[in-house]
Structures are given as structure tokens and as C-alpha cells.
Length: 456
Image (cartoon, rainbow, N blue to C red; front, side):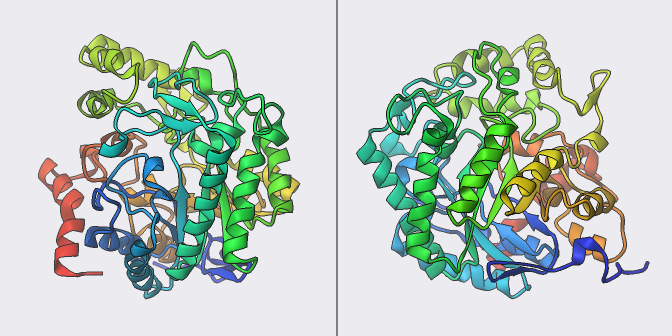
């Protein structure tokens, strides 16, 4: 098997504000509940991320790292909310660097999209741009006042400073998929009438203030990206009673120009006003799996008890699965077509790249070399990010380097990984990809064995 040519666009290095990516594939933010309840890091986290660094990616974006305890979406993820957490992040970054891989810490605040509140915040509404619950789960919200907004803005800056102190190569600010900064950006969510609501520029104010606070702490010579939802028009597909479509790609193009002016280095492009969402992660709705895990959110959202009850009955599970994908462009005659998922966001990425002049990282169900090469060659994006494809095949980039067009056992986009993550170790739970059920679980638990053995 011949190795890839040095002219292969996938393996062309790229330097952005002093940060060099050795190739054009990075691991997107995934991680699962493998750390401690208080946000301290476990050895399993280090073993987990090191697995992907060995597999050949040029950079890893951490799982969402909470910047404050009240903004943590799910306990059990390593957070970066106080200085005592810095040494463990430093250890992780050092291990990743051994494999010529860069590490970017994702700064996160959930707002109302808090799937599982920590005990001290249990029953309390999440802070948000609004006091209205979301239409999917009924997650409760409390409208932030200006002083609270400023406190959170400054918390982003302090978290970025900790990331730099830990030796991380950059930070990514989450402003997508229904989390706090997206709750301010989105016209479907933000119903404020003060300086943080109304027109697009006012809705973008908090995000721009966050970038300013981060730059004040880390300086201009440090890589800073924003993960942005390109569009919200498909909100009504998950919440059929929604009356507001949300931001359009034209809105996001305008926001991207402001982000460039604010000193941002890159935009990581996603879409959707919640997570999970029919387009993020694109694919099937594993209603049978949701039936067994959705109960964890029972007391978090006002709509959860009804949905959980309906999920116990097969006809309703089929109805939910149908509604999830009823108008998806990657389905034909009601069947999922995996080839239509790869690169699904690249047209939006191309518009953002052309308008802003920024480096654009594109989410898109990637897992085969040719679609990635085509997107890079056409300058639709500069880097692609992969989550599920690497979860299924952590050594995917090494396979590309060896000349393979794609994995022998590709991700099937069944989304069982995402819908099991609240309750179980993050892993591939598609039994069709394994020789046996036992092999599947052995793979799911292997990261704990590696941590115990110190195999980083």
C-alpha cells in the first residue's frame, strides 16, 4: 500500500497565529463523563485524548471545559473553573505533545441548556438571555442581568488565561448548538430589549465582549477560535411548535466579519440551536437507546417526563425517529444515505471563509479521504473536524497517511454514541461494527484499562 504524496492537501501543514497544524484534520470536541464530579481530571481523560493523538490528528479540541460550576452542562467533564485545575491540564497537554499533536481547550458555559445540573444547582434555572424554557426539553431558564453577564464574560477571560498557563496551544469559545453564547446570538432564543437583545449586533455583543476579555488575558499571539452555528432555520424540525426560525447563514456571515475585526483567528462551523439536533450529529435518532437514558434529564426539563413516558412505547419511538429525519437532505425515500452527510456544512463554511478571511474549520460527518481533499482543494474550508468518525476509528488519519481511502468499518451515523453519553462511557455502541457484543463493550471500557496501566 503506497503512502500519501507530500502534495496531498490533507497533509499540508497550516500555521495560524503561530500555531502549526501538521495536517488538516483535527478531532472535534468529544469526551464523555470520564472525569470526577467536581471537574477534576481523571487518568482516563488523559488516556482517552492520547488515543486520538496517536491516531494522527494534528490537533485535539477538548471536551467542553466548564468555566464556572453553574455553567457545567453535565458533571463528570474536566473543567477549567479554578487555578487548582491547571496542573492536571498541563499533564494532559504534555502527553498530547509527545505525539506531535496540538491541544485546544474548549471554553464552555451551558446556560439553560444544562442536561444534568450539579447537586448545588439542582432545580435552579440555568442563566440565559431569556427566561423562557427551550421547546425541545423544557429546560428552565433565568434571564441574566447586565452585572451577571459581565461576571460570566470575565470568567471566560480567566479560563483562557488558565488554558495558556497549562500549556494548551489555544482555546475555543463555544457559541453554537444552543449553549449560552448562542442563546444570546440566536433570534429564536434571545427576546431581550436591552443592549444585549434586538438586532443582530446587539445579540452578538456578549460574544464580542468575551473575545475582548479573552484577548486581554492571553494576548494577541495566542490561538483563539469560536465554534459557531451557521444557521438555525431547522429549529422547527425538533420543536414543531416553534414560531421563530432563528439565525440564517446571512446572519452568521455578518457575525463572522465582526469576529474577524475583534481579533479572532478561526471559526469552527457547526449548526443548530440545540444538541443533539437532526443535523448535529447528522444521522439517525436511536430512539431505543434514548428510551433507556433520557430519564436522567427527568427533573431538568418540563417536557422531559412526557417525552420519556412516550419513549416507552414502540409506536411513539418510531414517531420520534420519523420526525427527527423527516426533511433531512441526507435521506432518500426515508432511508439514511451516509454519502450525503460527508461535507454537509462546506457550502456554509465557504461563505464564512470568503466573508471573514478567517481560517475555517468545518464539521461535516467526514470519514473518507476524497471528500476531505475535495473540500480543501476547493477552498471551502481550511481544516475539517471529526468526532464520530474518529470515535469509530481513532487511527483514521494514520489510515489516510498509509494510502487508504477510508476505514474498513466506517461510522454508520447511528448516533448511539451521542444518545448513550449521558449515562455510559462515550464509545461506539453500534453492534454491527463488532464481531460480538462482548467485543463492543471491551472496546468501550478499554480507556479505563489504559489509564490504570498508565499507557499514555
